[in-house]
Image 1 (cartoon, helix red, strand yellow):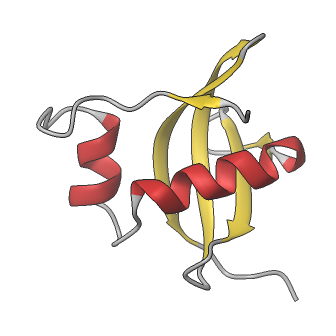
Image 2: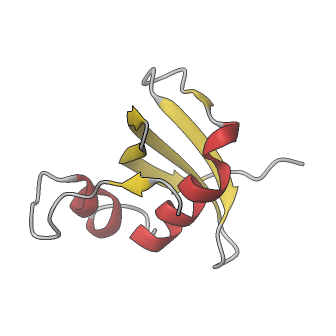
Length: 90
């Protein structure tokens, strides 16, 4: 089993789900989870936020960036902060 991903309630307008899925850039929660589960080992620290950021392709053929909090290493647990489409590497 992969990492646990923590989402706020879908009707919480101040929560991470609302921010990413409703107010975001058309990115779904499934896409965020897909990238976190597949690419978290390749994370780096975001220059702007100081939080981990990871990049990856989704099954919808979009290259996205996901900024998140690492809640726990054992069990591995993430809480997404934001996500956006990014320019793919060359």
